[in-house]
Length: 469
Ligand code: HAM
Image 1 (cartoon, rainbow, N blue to C red):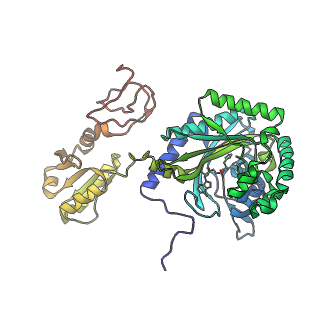
Image 2: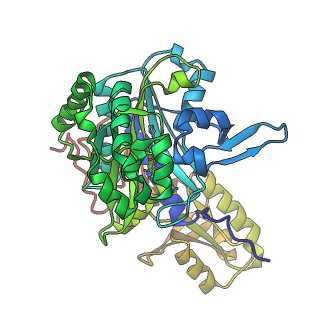
Image 3: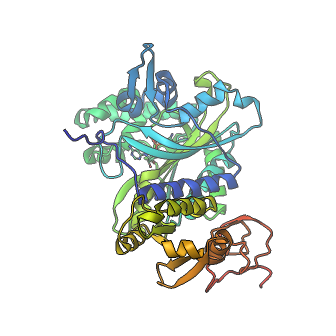
């Protein structure tokens, strides 16, 4: 029997690993610009964290959790989302006793027993943030601005933000009543999920994807007519800040989000591929009032979002935003003949210790086969190690792309490799005036900031240093 991955899960390897890592790195960099710190949480939580946190009325808790009894007979659940776990951690570690607001970001796998389809998995990855301890329209606005700027840093130009307000507790109680009154007259013709929703959370009926139900929902009362004065004021304050930042959005009164903890401001971000493929929302989030308190902590409000990393990856691939990412190797060391295998092995190790990604075959191979392999591995250079070369202490190094070959001294291997790779090294520099983030000698960037990224090549280096201008 040949085993397949569990339905709805998938193996991630090759370019997808690089792509997903890149996405996480860029989003983490965006978060750091906003002073968010990373938090790493267990995959498993006691089931109650989600049943009370994510909410007993949500589809996630009712139908989609991977829940089981551990050997100590305790009910545990593989996280279907991070927010409830972050709150649990804030309480367990008394993080609320420190500086507020807490600004945390996270990334990792989440699990939901959903029907797998395009962009929907049972194991998927989320990148998200939570900001706790500041109940403020500006905090809500910062959250959506950070989500948009993260997506822009990934290269997405047309980001479509949908926004709604679910109001405060009074708003929702009044609105709930109005919805129940309206849907009661139609519920017999609606889907079985909506029948359940009418009991548990009538707002979710507005989110139903069944066409006939959507038609009925069009005639339902509108939440904006039920917002209390305070909720309305807060909502328009948030919108005006988002407006002032030049972020385009549309108001979507049917956006209710599927988790129980939201109040006031909620949003989703949708992106489509050039071919018009819809992978679903790439980002969802909003404000929550009583979540921390519900889980036994102090009464502090929060706001956050999470993005689906697989969905982002698919869209970035389709929008050619990951074309430059490639698996590669600096050096492929080629031993010519059996006798030099050990020397080649040592040279390979030395190159690695100098910081170059290097590989080499464990047994002897034909020269042509090794070249093909070097090309296939995406090696920049082949380092040829033969008996004669070892005797003379001079190896040959060949640029795989240009086929140019030169000699390199074994004794000064590190220095000479440095000269050859020189400007090709990737440096980190964060000066914004300087597009080249290189600290190599050829490129005399004097911004003094060592931490920003440059991919300068010796020839055709087009860096614009402020001191050049
Ligand atoms: P969510 O809308 O359930 O929100 O999920 C956030 C994102 O995770 C979605 O927009 C989607 O991109 C991705 N996602 C969700 N389910 C799947 C799936 N089955 N397969 C692939 N991707 C998926 C939350 O999880 C909230 N905790 C967000 C939040 C944080 N709200 C406040 N703070």
